[in-house]
Image 1: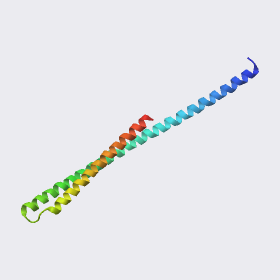
Image 2: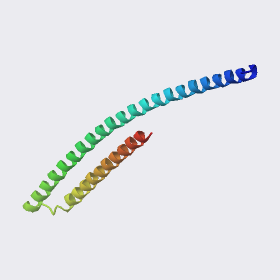
Image 3: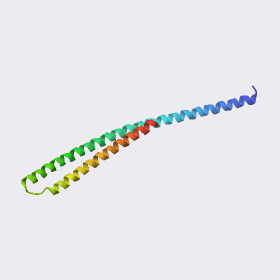
Image 4: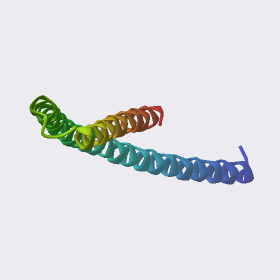
Length: 122
């Protein structure tokens, strides 16, 4: 093997070493990014759980209010002291709010599922 061939081999060896170091650095960065994404997924799951609880609590409170308003409406209708029409409107509005809250909850769940699936693909 001649001197020129030896130099070419040394140059190739240095280039391969540099590529290996570069690849190792990229792998290290990707691992760090993966850990960061996993932490974000955990945080999103916790946030989702908190939002679910908050929405469930709000739905329960609204359902209690609906129950109470319905009882008042029955009492008003039974006593003849009013027609209860205003309360019916209030009950309908509360039911609409409950439905909206349930839809928000479903959208949040879908978003978290999508985020988890996307992070798992990467």
